[in-house]
Length: 73
Image (cartoon, rainbow, N blue to C red; front, side):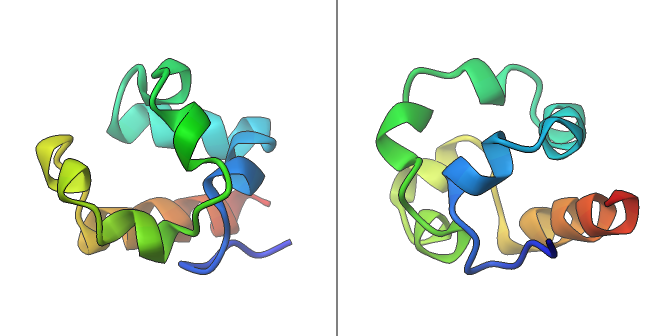
């Protein structure tokens, strides 16, 4: 399954390879309690939140993560 900006956070977190890559970009993000509230959100909608910027999450970063994830699966 190819992940896109329209994939949900929950879908990404179910894929262990995807989580490993995500952790490489933002260590500890997969265990952050705030993710529980974001599981049903798409990556696109997550990027629109002001909190995304606080964590240093940019569209460029998300696209890099998606590219690496999709290359491995």
